[in-house]
Image (tube, rainbow, N blue to C red):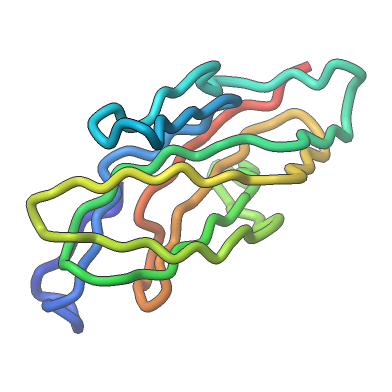
Length: 149
């Protein structure tokens, strides 16, 4: 999680993502507001059944957010992590969204399920979903997974 800086340029407006989890299945019980989301088949790694390149039809990202009350626009960026000369280098692959979310208050966590479609993986390696909010300098959260043989 990238830390909130209360002394930043916009000290009145902040947003924190305490959890970002990728999963294959996500349910929301809209008949019972107290149930929230159920996550299933949480992603740790992905294996392409017939080799790479591989296209996943969809995944879900479950995000728990809190911060200053208001409406925010969030986006998800898929990147590939490549190690070059001992340093991690991020290669942006695709952006998803936007989604409009609402945060009711600073001490209340709001949960969202974001469906990500057509995820293209060129080969084995480390990939990362980053959750971004418009008007903020860095990602709110990161979720890594490994593409394996």
